[in-house]
Length: 340
Image: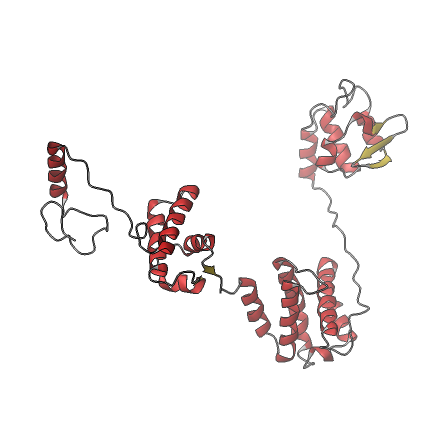
């Protein structure tokens, strides 16, 4: 391309929208335009916008629309148009573009997710990529001993996709199940060559050292694995049929002296002392405390209704609820004064 003013060839590697060879030609051209009353030259347009290919032209318009909607920078829009031109120019109408091809044929400056978003909006995208969780399943199952790898891989894929009688599990559940079962499988593999050779004694041996939530999580994963294996005919009998692990429940930890002093300093008003009593004695959550009304408190019978559950009012809470203490509110007021 040559300079519009002097005709000198524009140096190679220049910006595509450059039309003058230097600042002097640009200034002179602007001077003569003003002198002659001519308007400025038309602004540079990306070739994809004026392409003769309908699919490329529609994709370019879609990219500009998404860019304006989502606040893409001009350089991001320009790079997306470059990628679309590389992919769609000369392609047969209606032929889809795979994600692998987008990654391979676009430049490193082009945003692959944005190009994919444009093509997906035009129904021209074919997602041929493997989800990360499937790659993770293949990799981790492949690390297991041969007699166990196939069954564990099939188990994890059923957890991921579900089947006729089971809904798909979340990716987090799959990670937790495998992380709990992997150490057990590696221990069994030292003496057993296949999952069908594992006995109930083998399971009890590896579960005996576990306690609390770790035991509950591991037992759940083991039951799930052997239930699946029995259903698919991978084992003859289910050694985890009678396996049970009690729910460990929540762990109650005593408050430290620092935490107790902080509560004492915060409970400076009757309303705040009532909130502390409800939380400490009745284990009331903040939402239940916030929704309490005067009708929920029955002082003569020493009863209180918290989150729909009627229970006895403790002595500490009763003293905090007595008129003139925390409920010095006008009749019908929905909450104790000072609550939020």
